[in-house]
Image 1 (cartoon, helix red, strand yellow):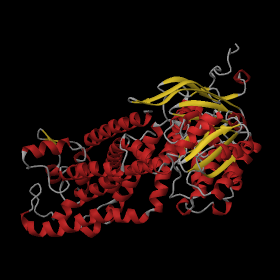
Image 2 (tube, rainbow over the protein chains, first blue to last red):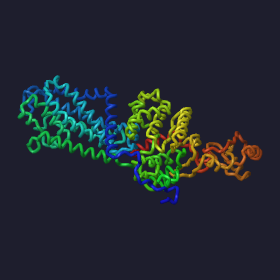
Image 3 (tube, rainbow over the protein chains, first blue to last red):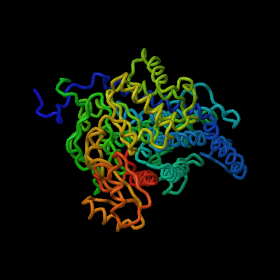
Image 4 (tube, rainbow over the protein chains, first blue to last red):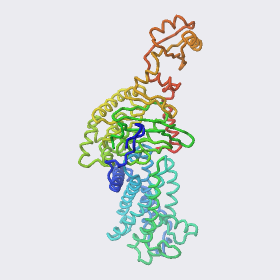
Length: 294
Length: 331
């Protein structure tokens, strides 16, 4: 077959010999995007430490301030031997994960603004790798922040044993992954830093306040109870609290604090599934957005 | 199969790109040969960057077809990406990582075999003379060093075609000459085809062939010498006490077509040295200054488009970028 014109050559049929098989290339892409995120996180340790300041501030201010003004009248699930600081501690762990997962996603907008995203987007890897790598990178950073707060547990008077920590880690990771995916999905269409910050501030505080981090969702007005159950963060906060307080309270009391739907206490496994499903949908949206070409 | 490509590395037929109602590229035909340095010359907003973005698969064409190294940019973007290297107009390095880390990242993501990575990175760093800065964070680099590092990175996966979008924009003349030294070396040593956009005339002179683009269309294509031959003879520029009257005189007495541009009269003549004494003798308007020069690409551009390329230089780049970002930042 000879082409009749030099301007319209035949398109090559065979794929480029340099193209490695799809899955390997995608996995490689995920790994390198994730690795770069962690490398940058490690370079920027100061930011990571500052990132912990806010949750700690909440812990100290709410734990000491609100705790003492509530005094003995704080009765989460009818347990008056639980201090407010102990109650709010798991919420603050969740908060650290929430904030750093979302701020991790901000690096996408940052990369877009400073051009580096282009380098990744023209690389011969599937763009799903960019979305997945970023989501995992953000989740890993959030996990690290959460773990640092877990180490501080004894200071608050919360006892954790090895078993509890091992049980907490997957729940922390699922929460971090779901929120990081949500951040990536949002950042995938955001063009400016300012825009992302506005949306995030608008979203982050309600997500945090309605998640039951600061007060139990049992006994709140109906509208708040509904919103709280629509808040994906609730499904990550609740298992963390139940596992952490399991070391202080008897199981029946822990269950009383648990998230309920139609008066049924949700098993923590089901909560994890709900959160994973949410994360998967968000990651799907992010992948679709990244694959779009103008 | 490759020999059917007739030595063409980039081809385009009727390439068109619209953003809403704005048509940025209006049907471009191209045929870039293997191993040549091909320049895309035009003012900002002429459609240069849009065309390069389509060719390197960052944008999809609205109509028309284009191939790079035999792969269709619209239907085989993954294959195109394996055979091209890119140096963008805006830097795309990770400023928080070192030069070496940026290169490692690139080598990894382009699937450079692990056994070759260290050697290749050493090679490209040597080429752009950044070996001693390999472990410095890119944030500390000057503009010229960043551009050199980007060129090194673009070559790391030994592409068949290197795309450069305004590679020397914003750099001082000395650094620009430096960059050109590297590019010439690259072409000589690796035989890579170079496709670049520019709005610098002197840079266009370095190319084997140039396409002059204005308003989304190619208005001329050829070697710099061929293009300059389009302007007959010499270009005479003069300033007078009354340009309108002097221009009318020149048109009447010499039967030429003078143009007034920037307070100067510009006229193409066969022989400038012979024309100037006659001009001064025969025109009634006092002549303040007069000069004659061989036609430059500036003159070609002016002749073809009716406006100078430099008119809309500086500020408009920023305006265009802000505009692009405001309307949704086309990557």
